[in-house]
Amino acid sequence: MVFKKMLSAFGVGGPSVDTVLTNPNTRPGLALDGHVNLVGGDAPARIEQITLGLVTRVEIEGGDTEYAGVMEFHRMPVSGAFELAPKQQLAIPFQMPVPWETPVTDVYGQRLRGMTMGLRTELAVARAVDKSDLDQVSVHPLPIHERILDAFQALGFRFKHADLERGHIYGVPQTLPFYQEIEFFAAPQYAQTVNEVELTFVTSQQGVEVILECDKRGGFLSAGHDAFGRYSIPHSDAARTDWTQVVDGWLRETTSRYGGLRAQGFGAPHGYPGHHGHRGAGMGGMMAGAALGMAGGLVAGEMLEDAFEGDDGGDFGEE
Image 1 (cartoon, rainbow, N blue to C red):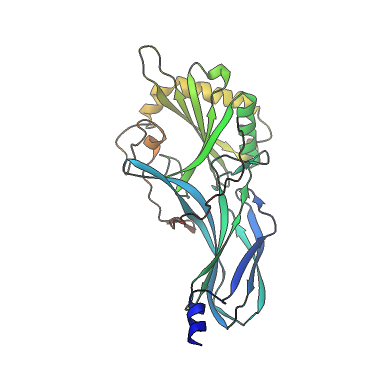
Image 2: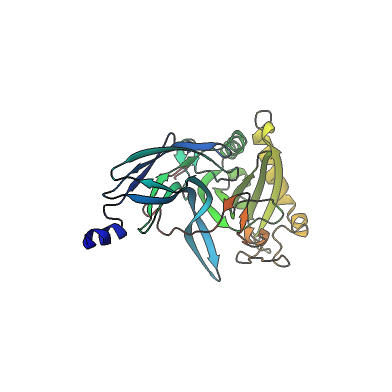
């Protein structure tokens, strides 16, 4: 009996949890539906709480080093405390809202290289090791995102990589503790002036803030530098704009207005509270700190190391 109690404390013979998503594909601002399936163990168990959390891999900087960790950025309780009988089976339905700022992981049906997303289920069991389950989630673009990404492709840009950077972009309202950078190799018509372009979407219910970072080439007597542009677009514009022409205009304006953008604070190397200067005049210069805290019911904090170990997820835009 003592041995069985010891095994139970380590989760052996205890309850099990398995979350099944009705559809693992979603979009920012929509929801994930499914069931949390429980099976009781060898003995009665007191379930303290069942919680769902969206987790993703984020690039984090500390001092002069940069490393990747897995961060939970949105959390929702599914159930409070209850008793689970031995071998009892329960299916608890849920509908979890997906935050508007949730980064895109899949484009044209393929996983963006560098992106991963999962729904983690936590089963808190009294006097025992907590159980967990992790399910891969695919976040697809909204129509406004699709039109802009289509325009980059039409202009000849080639996808390079995508990642999430911990922090906030200067002057841009954010609720999540990170922002996504979608990186492209320059299209031929821009190649003499631009090496690469990084595209960031900060999405809300009203529309999307589009931030461009252009890595400009240096000349014979001048060093290269980063140029920034920011554009606010309502969702309603998605279906009625020539986006190839619009994006081309953004890029040409951004690369020609470098001095003016610096004067407005974009890319300024100093002078902002909590500034991270790791990239000189790059996107790091737009960050007003990486204060996490709680905003809009979002939990920004817990690092889940190795949660996605070995998860490549497939790549989009491979050369």
